[in-house]
Image 1: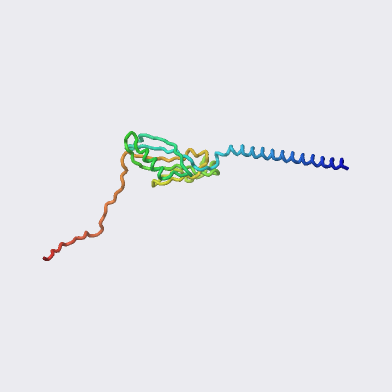
Image 2 (image 1 turned 90 degrees about the vertical axis):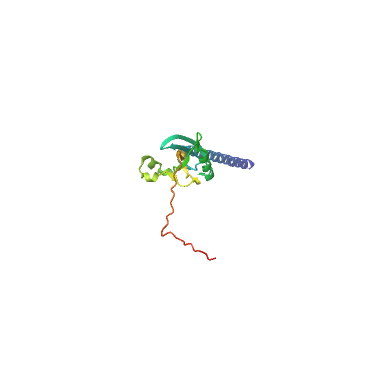
Length: 191
């Protein structure tokens, strides 16, 4: 009787051991499948959008309509934004070339905010070009926000700062009086 019980116990343990081995093989297969998927996914990482972490800043120095010099810097930004104080510092730090002062003329932002599903249309120009207007003239010197960009287009995100040697002419308005001028009469005071 004991031999039968030992034999049944041995048979049960053998079945459990095979089940554990099968589960272990299934786990290995699952790990291999997950690893294969991860490796396959790496090929497409360049098509996902990510937050802009650095931009190229180009400085153009113009004198009498002639381009005198072009400089380029790569600048790190936080949370996809170039804050106002940092932008002012960059402008002030780069307005002198060879001890000659240049004046800020324009600031342009180039931000490729293309969606991953539209890459083919963009490359084949099947959509209107109006959908792909990525260059923007900034009207004020303020914090500049860059939209998330597809990884492979991240190097195109740029800021163009144009300096001019002559001071920009600000339009000044002349005060215009509408109506007659007021005339006052002098009265003599009695003593």
